[in-house]
Length: 382
Image (cartoon, rainbow, N blue to C red; front, side, top):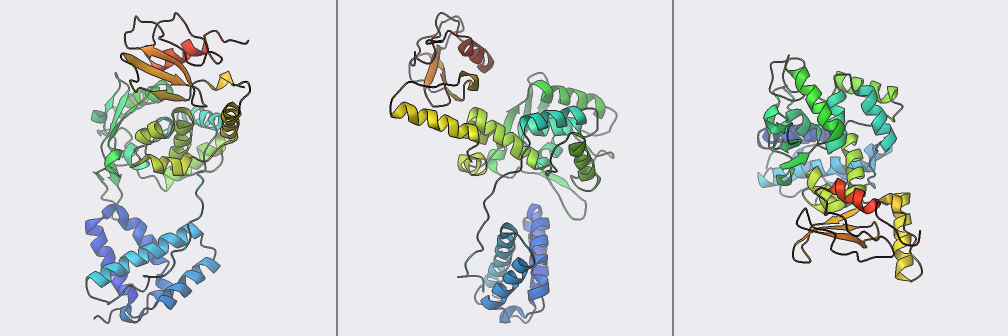
């Protein structure tokens, strides 16, 4: 057993983290710092569960949020597990303790109108293209700032996400693997996002860097300090709430989940599992309750009260019939129309004739065409 203090062990453990998990170092270091005042001077072998509990109580009384309290406790427990593995102590004092409860997560996001205003206000600024692509794709800041022009196909309107910046305290930032394996993905961009990339390409020709969003010196742009000040100024100018840059990802995630569903949104956001997407963005908005009420009204009988302005919510490419190319569904899960594989073919059938009657129209070549066909079809009962 050892005679070192908790603070000395934390220092030694963080050096190991720096080598094995450099991306986690900054986070672990900040969490460990909260435990040093109360626990740092205690001998590692003398640390008891009661000491940890009193330290957490003190942090809570000082106003620390439940989520941060939980992160601090987990970080300390990880460090003490490492001490057990190296036989510095026999047991982890955190073992058996109740983990502080995690507060309910609800992302701070912009409305569609606020997002549009922010893009307009920021368009001609240095942050403009970055904010536009962030809002359009939901990419993480590390993924955006690690992008090189080799990852961007302007002709196809596609971004290949295959790396992320790993921020290091010494400033020697490097591009490493994405946060998860599913973080490696292709993201399509259209409209203003594609315009922003074209504009950014012309701007970066003057900078000696392969990065899409480089710092002034051509290196990795760090999302802190002046970056944050400029971002907050743009939010104020656009009349938007003071959110974090990462909340642009949450804004995109919420819009994606509402428009294309959890599974597709999960793939575009690079989540390891759709359950993560559902956890963050699955909370119901008022319009979701309205859709649920319509669905339940259909279950118990009576005429459908379909709001046609909501458009198509779900898309399924499952070939439930030979040659089937696309299935369009309303927000209550009912099938609106099915289209055949061949571009020259016509709509095969419509299952819910009381909702839509789309006949004698060419099969769509894209989702946009499909939406236009369905929304432009004759509706019965009107």
